[in-house]
Amino acid sequence: MIHDDLLIDTNSELVARLRRDGFALVRGSETRAQLARAGLRDWSGFAATWDDLGLDGYMADGGRYRRRRHAAFAVTAAGVDRKPHQPHYQSRDYNTLNGGIARWFDPVTDEAAGHPVMNAVLGHCHSVFGALKSQVAAWHVEIHQFRIEALPGQEGRPTPEGMHRDGVDYVLVLMVRRENVASGVTAIRDHDRNELGSFTLADPLDAAWVDDARVFHGVTPVVAVDPTKPAYRDVLVVTFQAER
Image 1: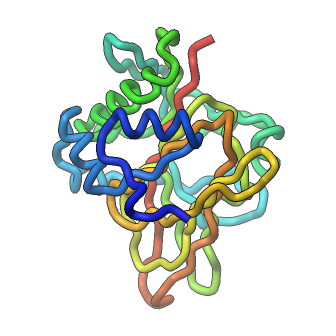
Image 2 (image 1 turned 180 degrees about the vertical axis):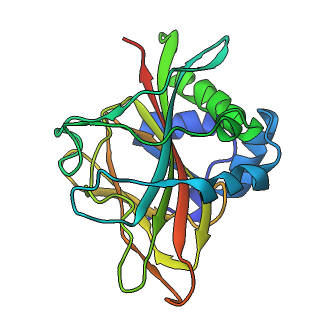
């Protein structure tokens, strides 16, 4: 388990923890302070863009509990440039459930893609991941807006493929909102599937940072606390891969 006395409040501590453990948890108050230095503002407006996500039509398990939008960027020291809309692809080596095909998701809206929060997140990620791989001049970055819904009588699965790697260099999972859901515990395991840590992203801006080459990650299903009310888990997932 991760304990509060191990949480991270500076960039240098974050980089050191990722180098040492291959993952790190940063609670929302620390993330907010870090992103404020990168230009964070209008968090509520950014979070509201999760209310306009299309249904994920590629779920091989037949589930209708996941909504999402997707976008790709080129990120360098000079800044962030959005790439033309493109499919998201993972081989079955990394996603045994939904991999092996090009998945065309609805694009992230211009409002969300150009929002100050998004710019702050991508800039902050570049500073952290760039410190870990200083030789990388340009990154291919993909962002995913996810809403996992716990429907009446049905759990929502944040990672239906189970414990997995994404096939990239680094991953950030940023909590946006939890509404009327229980569980959703993140677990981190090594290549032998031994558990290295577990924690719940509970509050806005709680963040899980992952060195994808070194560890597996997965999240337990969420269920509605009150099945008569909407129940969902909103996160932003950001992946960084060195441009080839």
